[in-house]
Amino acid sequence: MNGASPYTPPTVWTWNAANGGKFANINRPIAGPTHEKDLPVGRHPLQLYSLATPNGVKVTVMLEELLELGHRGAEYDAWLIRINEGDQFGSGFVAVNPNSKIPALWDRTEEARPVRVFESGAILQYLAEKFGAFLPTHPGERAECLSWLFWQMGSAPFLGGGFGHFYAYAPSKIEYAIDRYAMEVKRQLDVLDRRLAESPYLAGDAYTIADMAVWPWYGTLVKGQLYEAGEFLQVHEYTHVLRWTDAIAQRPAVRRGRMVNRSWGQPSSQLHERHDATDFETRTQDKMTAKDPA
Image 1: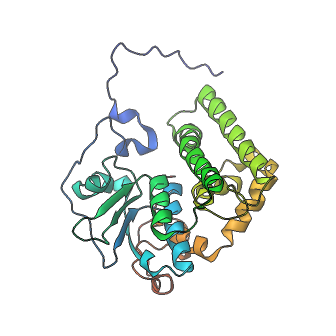
Image 2: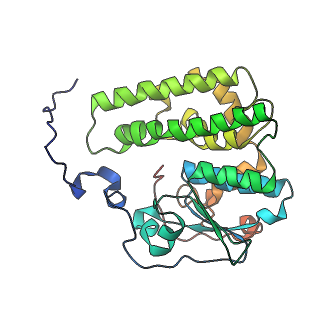
C-alpha cells in the first residue's frame, strides 16, 4: 500500500465538483437537462445519437451488420454527441435518454408514435427483434445469447468505471483500487477465454448481438487499445479471446461501425456523422481533436 493518509467518510456526503478527475465536467449527482437544445433529425426512421466509445460502437456495428445483410430499413442517421462538451445534458437528449448517457436511439418508423430506446444492450436487443437478426430464436440458444449480453452489461462497469478510471484517469493513483479492479478484469477475461475455447462465438457457432456487445470493450482491451493496459494486464495470455477479437475485427460492417461518431485518432478512422452509406467514401473531417474517453 502507498503512504496516503487514511480517509474517513463524512457523516453526510457533499459534492466536490473539482474532485472528479479528467471527466469531472460530465459527472454530477443530479439528473435532468442543463440547457435547452433540440436534437437534429435526419431523413431515416432510425436516429442515433452517440459517440464511438465502446458502448456507442456496439450500436453502429449492429446497424452496419443489418445493412450488410440487406435490411434496408436499418438505414440510419448517426449524430455526434460530444460528451465532453455536455451535449448529453441538452433537453432533447434527455428526452430520449433520461440517464444522459450515449448511445440513444429514436425509432420514428411510426412518426405519430416514435419509440425511444436507451442503454446499449436494450438497443441491440430491440434492433435484433425488429429485424429478426443476430438473436437466435431457439429458446436455449436465445437464452445463451442474452446471458452473455447481460453479462457484458453487468461486467463492463468494473472494466470502465472501475479499472479504467482508476488506472488511466483518476487524479491520483490508488493502489488498492487499481489492484482490486485489475483482479476483477483478469477474472472476466478468463471467463471469456474459457467460453471461447468451447465455441467460435459467445452464444455458440453463430455471431450474435452478444459478440457485438462484448467485442468493443474486451476486444480492444486485449489488443492493447483500451487504457493502454495490455502489458499491465498481460492480455497475451487470453489466446481464445485474441482469436475471436481478430476474427470480428475483419468483418466489413465492424470496420465501418467503428468509424461512426468517432472524433479522435487518425483522420482516416473518423466519420463524425453518418447519414448515408456513401458517407464512408465521401466523408470530410472537422478540425476537432480529442482523446478516447472510453
